[in-house]
Every structure is written in structure tokens, then in C-alpha cells.
Length: 144
Image 1 (cartoon, one colour):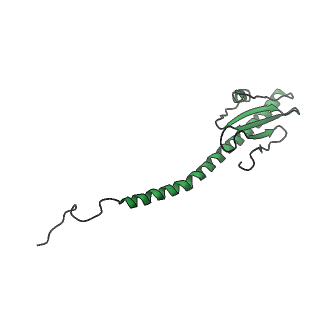
Image 2 (image 1 turned 180 degrees about the vertical axis):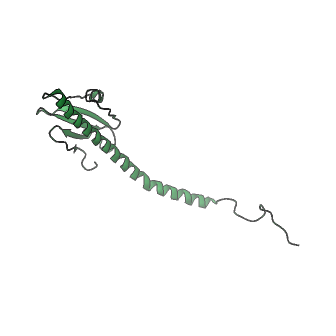
Image 3 (image 1 turned 180 degrees about the horizontal axis):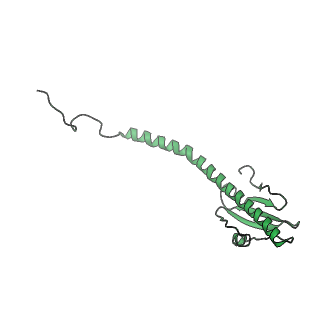
């Protein structure tokens, strides 16, 4: 007479061996090691683009401020509360998490807007845009 085996009596693997687990963990580690540097570079690029956008917003708002006031004056702001003053006087709503913003007199009757990196690979480096030229000049040339 043939013996009938139940589901639990059939010989089948009950789990993974330690070697299989080690191989899976190593593969996940290799994938993570490849992905993290790319993620860091992408985050830095997005922060730089945000600062460029904010500088162009300040540039355009300064031009509007100049036209509205009808005189040879621009709005200047520096120091700890510069961004608050920029937002209030130029009717902007900018946030500064990775850069510090300031607007100064460029000595020729115009302005220079600056974004200074607070941390990261280009710490304390500046991006600038002037009243004469809407091109953004970057201080950390090799990494930005």
C-alpha cells in the first residue's frame, strides 16, 4: 500500500541558509553604494537651481522696485534678516534653507544680489546677479 504524504511531510526547503542571506545583503549594499553618491549630486544640483531661481526672482523684483519708485534707487538688504526684508519690500516669498541671500549696492548706482551657500561642498561660496546683467556668476565653478 502506498503511503500518502501530507503537505508538511514532503521534503522542501524551510528557509534560506546563512550564505544566501549574506549574498542578498551584499547585493543590496552594492546597489546602495552606487545609488547614494548619485542621489547626493542630484540633491546638490536641485539646491543650486533653487538658488538660481531665487536670484532671478530677486533680480526681476529689483527691476520692478526701480520702475515703481521712478528713481535711481534699488532695495538693499544684508545681515541676518536680509531675506525677511527682501520678501517684504520686494513682494516675494522666498525661503532660505541652503543659501543666505543679500542685496547690496554695486557702487555704480545699481545692485548686486548674492546667494551664499551655508553648507555642502561649496560652503561660503557666492552666486551673484547684478543690475547690469541678468547672468548669474557662480563662485564655486568646479562643482556648480
